[in-house]
Amino acid sequence: QQQVKQSPQSLIVQKGGISIINCAYENTAFDYFPWYQQFPGKGPALLIAIRPDVSEKKEGRFTISFNKSAKQFSLHIMDSQPGDSATYFCAASKRATGNQFYFGTGTSLTVIP
Amino acid sequence: KAGVTQTPRYLIKTRGQQVTLSCSPISGHRSVSWYQQTPGQGLQFLFEYFSETQRNKGNFPGRFSGRQFSNSRSEMNVSTLELGDSALYLCASSLWVAGGYNEQFFGPGTRLTVL
Image (cartoon, rainbow over all chains, first blue to last red; front, side, top):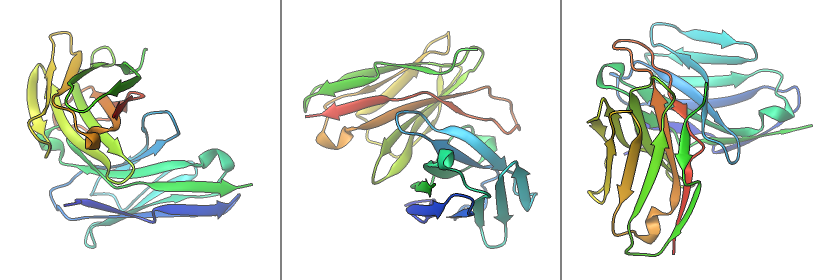
């Protein structure tokens, strides 16, 4: 059972455009929601993360929007650049029980110059 | 500060064999987690070790096992390999702080191919 569902599977955006990736979760006990970025041949790297008591978090061109009642959160990449082309994973965890993270299936983002 | 290192980076085995993968966490990190990454399933949690004890375990068969040493280095073992075990195995370490938002740092992974 996939505890975190992610869409779309792939995304093609023009340079300068906005990339939007969506995730939904089931377990209301989750209290930490990070997004990871992975380039080919590399391990995932933390991009940005949010707590459920915050509805939005922005770091540079990257913004997480969080809707607790809908159990959904999304990543927005503003002014997308070719260097942003990578696979993005959302994740969720229950901090009290350790570092067991539940990941979405990933979104392959391609930014066309 | 050195990142998470994993050895070997690539491995080819045949069905029925067993394999041991190694992970050295970032210095000072006591939590080490293992994930299996495949194109269809994404990242699936295998287990987490903290201070030499398995703290969490994912939904994988008993053929998958692990351990952590006193220096926080960790190994995972897969016995009786099956074709479906072909995957990228990722190790992640974290500076565990109770109640905190603990970032996980991933290694580059070990690419296992089972023939």
